[in-house]
Length: 88
Image 1: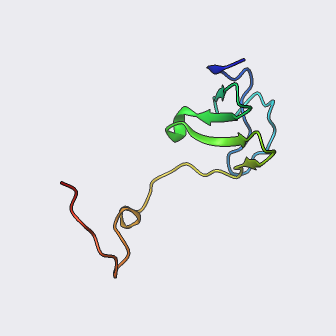
Image 2: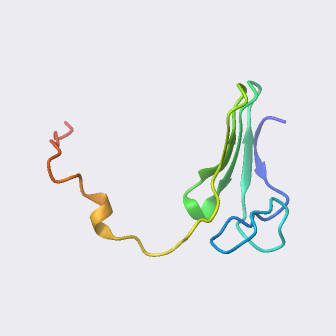
């Protein structure tokens, strides 16, 4: 398998859920893989951010206890002492 396809199950990775990969309620997800052995499971509701990442070298990362809601606008400003260069 290579490319992008719909993941058959829901992911119970939201805050308060049990972390199951085969849930009936949870996040709809897409799975991406390539011929080099990389696999990612991504959720459209999270702008396709990888929730599960497996790399060919064996590294595994799983994000759980995800909370979806309003985000404080201050998170989008640089730190107080940051030097910001305009892009031209």
